[in-house]
Length: 126
Image (cartoon, rainbow, N blue to C red; front, side, top):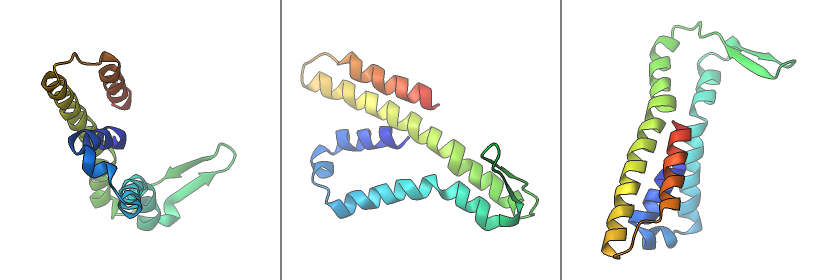
């Protein structure tokens, strides 16, 4: 999801993203990292006593017994399932549209290897 979005950012604003300072790049990475750890931290904050760790199989199970989960589970599902898929599909569509437009402006043919890579990445992710 983030890979396709960052490719789109670099394609739309090549000079801005190229001149990012280290601090701006770290902020972008921090934002991506915070989104990725949202769900596990939410499980520990909402109901830390309902997490069961099985060290024999190295798995954890969640009981969702708290009443708070009736509110948090739909919100968590949106952030962890729907939103990344939506970002991936929209970023890929815009990325392919921009690639076609840039190839037409440069009077070149599209490089199919790059397009196939983007499409395969999107298909595997979804």
